[in-house]
Figure 1 (cartoon, rainbow, N blue to C red):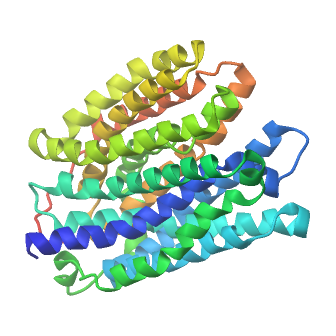
Figure 2: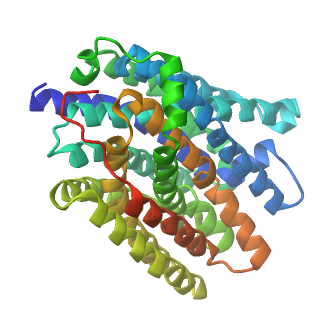
Length: 422
């Protein structure tokens, strides 16, 4: 595969990954409005918790999707797997967009929304794995960190797009209109770009590494290998926990944290989130390339130590006198830490998983971690409510960073040659 073909393939693969994260971001940004639409209550805290719990429920389906779909993709190929996950993801997005509110159809409304989130979670269980593995297998050993970083960089486009649309809508539409139905507009936009994504992915080439495999592993073999390699999967879970926790703290949770906890204007919180997305988009490839130069582990260790030492103090400084400038400063600082860690972590995870179960192993580790990290908005809301300390998101991030540090110290990569799957 030529350099031009690699770049084109990376863009095609990352496009579907972007849609998945776009849907997740929209749900997180408008959690309060979605809570009022589908989980009405006299208690705003209860509405927000139910909305965030539904947001998190999708993550519980990810391990199941990782095992079932991951084993299937390791059998049928990366290209066909990427098209399958995009199909399932699109159905979940459409269900959330079109479901009437609780006032119209009663209890059926939250049930349909929950089903849509579970389907999204099931497909997302292997979407990130398929994307990361595809990028890792088309890259050369000396550029793997840089190329794989585009998986996460594509997510930042979704963060920026969702935040930019949110800023525009909050400027054009009054708050009651946004709460009533305006939050559906970003979801509808996501539905409209689905045909474009199908067009992009249908022209993907299969990776040379998979095509060179004369006997793809059978599903039973994949599952048996997962059991025997449980130590590697556990290390992967600890590694990804830092990634998912930090990502959702600085993106999906920021709008609700800024408006509901810090009592800043919704538009200000969305602008901060937009800036975070832009920062991540620029920095992730930079740190991915740096990991190719100095190695993955030094970057992972440095980023986790910095997070452990600074996350809670930075958040305490923010909540002591909340303002747009302080929120922006803290979130950009945490975004730098996230980019440094994630720029090395995703590529490293593709390197420590046994090649013949690379999609399944990567997806299972990633999905199991998101079962915890994906509930970050819910956990942070609950921790603040129980302790009265608005800086608790920083404490939770420090715990996740400690897990990432343990993983970085114990992880060891497989010796994988470019273009070889086993």
